[in-house]
Amino acid sequence: MSSPSDENKDSAKPSHFLRQVIENDLTQKTYALRKWGGSPGNAKHHQQGQVDVAKIRTRFPPEPNGYLHIGHAKSICINFGLARDYGGVCHLRLDDTNPEKEDTEYVNAIIDAVHWMGFEWKSNFNNQVIEHLYHASDYFDFMYEAAEYLIESGHAYVDEQSADEMRINRGDFSTPGKNSPFRNKTPAEHLARFREMRDGKLTEGSAVLRAKIDMGSPNINLRDPAIYRIRFATHHNTGNKWCIYPMYTFAHPIEDALEQITHSICTLEFEDQRPFYDWLLQRLIEGKLLSAPAPRQYEFSRLNLTYVITSKRKLAQLITEKKVDGWDDPRMPTIVGLRRRGYTPQSLQLFSERIGVTKSDSWIDYSTLETCLREDLDPKGARAMVVLDPIKLVISNWETLHGVDALDACQAPIHPHIPELGKRQFNFGKTLWIERSDYEETPQKGFFRLFPGNRVRLKYGHVIECKGATYDAKGQLKEVLAELIPDTKSGTPGSDSVKVKGVITWVSTHEAVACEVRLYDRLFQDAQPDAGGKDFLSCLNPHSLQVAQAWMEPSLAKAEAGQHFQFERHGYFVADAHDHTSNKAVFNKAVGLKDSWGK
Image (cartoon, rainbow, N blue to C red; front, top):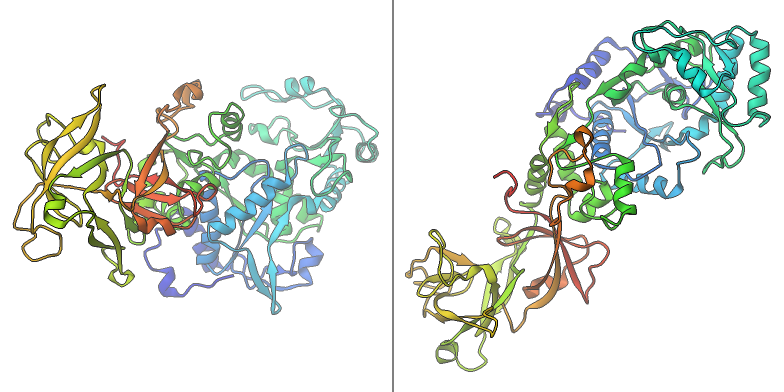
């Protein structure tokens, strides 16, 4: 738990409606007398505790049925960030109420992703460190107890209509629903039948437990929603203990209350469920199963990011149909994919802060995300020269000026704005690798690089004058020829006496190190690939991955997996977390130096 100073709290944190809600609650002391029993629990458990030192409690409650994506990253930053900024605690809760979809692989991936994002779920209680990592399935016993209480108090009943009958009798937005013929049986009859559900005596789909609210409500979510169903499935956490499982809309408010959450923050699709959230908690507080004040639910708009899909089903389809290479493919919007691509926790936190929190749906342009990564990497990414599409440059007068096999030592800053990092060393020689696109036999207007008769500077090296090129039997460019202009070496007296308009990067063939560079781009060509019923697979970008066999300067030979660099002229890159080794260098393009899609 953290308690920010007033200085930090007031230091340009952008305000939004959630901050206003929290600040008002703190001013009004809405939760000031709320108690915390040291762990999640019922009313009696917390009443035996002490006044909660956490000013607010939030939670991040992903369902462990897939890998977290960029939308979850926003939610992580909101929930953990608000708790941090207002002296509170954020719980990490694995909402594992569905036994057929959850998997320990996803549980571990979620925990790792939140840690990587830079957040913790610890606090101090009675001089002990408490880990606020919880599973919804840990509360199944209480949920069952709550369900029996609702039945006994006349607020729930077992319905044995077929699924089609329930759908028809539910009505629609213009037609009120009809009461189930099972609705008015006695609580004792419903309780006996519910226990038969629990004991496995009824088949799947033959019965559900429903809340008894109002079948004529204009809010369809209050027309006696199902709160328990039968599932003969092994649960990853509770095994085969249960064959009935709570519905998410029933479990969610109970989980919040047991954990003494103050502000339950979720996306707008849950707005219509809020009346049931409040109804359920009020009933359980009336029955003294839960303590007041109850948590409050607040909704914000989900993240809609251009050129991205976040549907778990569609992301899984990309994998099963071999369109990408797994959940951590650097083109995927998953946190593991973004991480492997080269995104940093700081860039994702900056992105979340910059796009803000609203209650209205809108689209965020992908370039906003890329800008945040550039801003994070520019001040800390070491510089290096890499030639992605190499063609040989031959300095024809090198031996005359410097001698046979001579090399000229050059140097460049590791980072131009952090001189204390020092210099990187490399050599200039007779033959160099340059980019194929740096030569044109007949240049277009505005082309200032190599063409016959033109002079350019080889960055950190010498000025050369292009003398032409040689071609192979098929007419393909083979070598570029040039002469070195004496006394023009960078950093030496008089080196700027020869004025040039073009500067190009290079690496010496004598010491260049081979590497693989994966040039990633946006996975989709369409800004909204799955909008309006479009076939999102038809919108795939065929150029989202291009692999270059490149040459890099020797300083990169010591790069470690996960280390970021700016490849001069090309963009920001990261040594691949999986495939990069000391024997085979593999780099992923994280983002270019500027937005190439906005033009």
